[in-house]
Amino acid sequence: MTYCVGMVLDRGLVMMSDTRTNSGVDNISVFRKMHSWSVPGERIITLLAAGNLATTQAVVSQLEERNKAPGERRPSILAVETMFQVATLIGSLLRDTIAGRNEAGQKAATPLFSATMIVAGQIAGMEPRLFLIYPEGNFIEASHDTPFFQIGETKYGRPILIRAYDPAMNFEDAVKLLMVSFDSTLKANLSVGLPLDLMVIERDRFTPLHERRILAEDPYFRAISSGWGEALKLAFDSLPDYHFDGTSEV
Image (tube, rainbow, N blue to C red):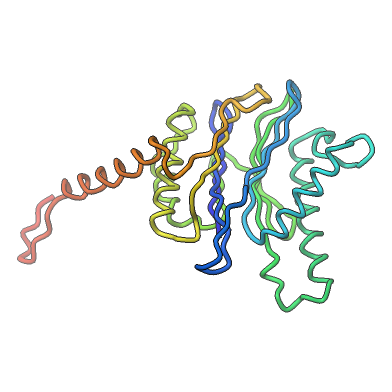
């Protein structure tokens, strides 16, 4: 499985993904699930992928091939005019890739070929945008009411995002929030694992403001993990006590 998050802030976009891919407890591998393309001064696009690895790699490979000569291999995400068109193109590729595998005589295993993607980015002269693309190729866009998207193992890391997200927060606090969300998921589900990939895109910058891979021995992530655990224990201890005799006070 996997866990990926894309988040819209007033200042731009923040994305994080894990890298664990497994087909059983004895077959665990590391694969990048975050892919990015940019034209300095003109556009930046980042894709997060969850689901069947062969499907997602096939989609990324097709995007890469079209980007090698965007004037000859149309359409390319480096040539289309809007982020909506980028999402439409990637959605079509995802849908056709899944359909192609089904038509190859493997319909009984259709769910195994499924994949979901988050696409984020900005094209010059337009707003940063974030999309969630479904296996069928259709998609939805982040909004004021839904300012972040998750794919993969979403339930464990969602509560902290809902409680602490603020569109006006700075990038550093957003990264800290995602670290807590991912730590909660790592603790609860073995199918999600380190390293983590992080990317921060500042509005109107068109190159990554911050990009790094977070390893298991990363001192900041380890401090977040232990600090969040201790903070939860302290918060729990500070709550009113319950008494069986009905005298509990609030």
